[in-house]
Amino acid sequence: MHVLFCLVLSLFFAMPAQAGSAGVVVALKPDKNPEKMLTERGALRAFLGDALGGPVEVIVPLSAATIIEGLANGTIDVGYLSATDMRNARQAKAAGLLLAGEIKGKTSYSSYWVTLKDKPYANIEDLRGRPVAFASRTSTSGFLIPMRDLQKRGLLSADGNAEGFFGKGNVQFGTGYVSAVERVFSGEAEAAAVSDYVMEEDKHLSAEQREKLRVFQSQGPVPTHVIAASAALNEERRAAIKAALLSLNEPGNMALRDQLFTSKLVETDEATHLAPIDEALKAIGVAAP
Image (cartoon, rainbow, N blue to C red; front, side, top):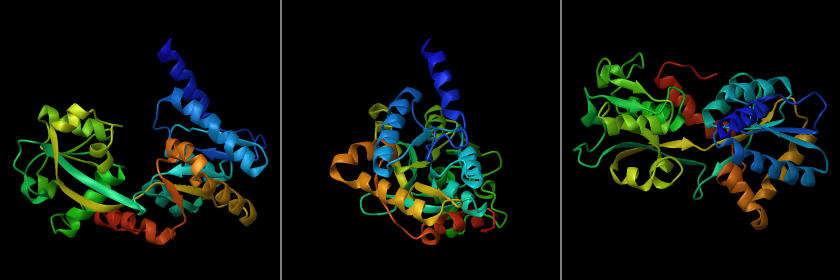
């Protein structure tokens, strides 16, 4: 019954908003338990509805690609995206950066290479010819930024293929941070590339799992997640939505803000924020727009 309930919720979240059914449509990323997101979705709808003085619909599409498509065709007004997804939205001329997350006073965080505690590695150069696991092919902190670091160190071949350094067949990809780390635990990989919060928070790994690992190198900056505004929004509506979202930083609203967006929301320059992503994509042979 629990599995069926979660499936129904997931399908419900993925349904696009009906044309004209909401004054503002907000899209969140599907990266949490569906039941928990149902509660957060309702809270955000009520908060923004009060702040904007009109109807708000909050949806949770099944992928970032769906959010970008909605931003492009105007069926989604604002969406919560990773910096890499924001770069893709910019390339598609679907949206602009409205706000970014700020963590410890910065709009960036770090990417980590982790290994088992008893392994001798001091930095990534010690992994030449050894198997490693990236979080996924689309992960910002678990692939793109580590690849940018390899390129800066002169360890990446001209074609952007990491096998030139780690060895043929030694570059693995998980389906997220946990699956990459599990390959380290199983011995399939000597190290995994993950976000710093994988090691510093309880969200992905248990305390017991983290105790078996150590960070042997960090790289960055990794641009924080952003709230993107559809290119179809007029300036008046865009400004009103921005003001409403910034009011989440007020003391009485911070709990909801952190549940939904994990950190303070701030204004930042789009080009500067996305520059590390452009550099990383260039390192693996993808040209910036």
